Length: 290
Ligand code: ADP
Ligand code: MG
Image (cartoon, rainbow, N blue to C red; front, side):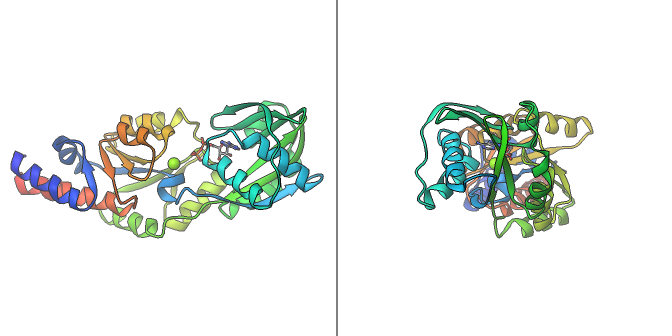
């Protein structure tokens, strides 16, 4: 690779909003054969909206407590839930205590009640039997929604669901990667059913779901151990270790600073078409000089 061709390639990439941190990353990108895409905020817009509420008791009282549990959480799911509740003009109670349990949900106390909001695994972890709600939950998940179970004073009290939308360009971007001979995998902390429903909308058939926050880097390492050259694409704080572990880390420019710092490339357009563009430009740069 001549410095001149690398510089020219980097310049052309930059014009398309693809910012390589250094020439070596542009050189390495042509070796990529596997692209791992984070789901929320990468394949999807990452702006979920509250769509469904199922309350065992009074719905307003239920949502007041759910809002209290989620008010202090910085998770996009929590923000969606709180915004949805506020839109119904329900005054959210103040929480007396709050703790995020990454990958599972939240634990809080409000109005003297103990609250849990999150996954099936969260309920199981606290020995709460919510199994009667699993069928309704699965139905929501099969339509691509993320449903979260709620327990009040250690009893199942209902669930809330949010829906996120895929970016309009994600399907076409996946198709182009395939044409380049790249295997595309989606990774998420979300449950398998929701993940598969979203993946199907953009033509991805391999999904790694229910991956705990610290597990994304581990999944990248496993692929590398199989001999794959992996590009990881993500936007979130919890994608940072995987972005750093991958052969090439690509951060979505509209995402968190932490992701951009950990990555080798920033995709300023926030659009997955840039991944195929980056690979194309790297291949072109490298073929010109070999
Ligand atoms: P991702 O960011 O990939 O969607 P996370 O690891 O952050 O996944 O979360 C995994 C799952 O844990 C979510 O799909 C949700 O079911 C649950 N969860 C996480 N945070 C919250 C929260 N604040 N409230 C309710 N559930 C949550
Ligand atoms: Mg994300």
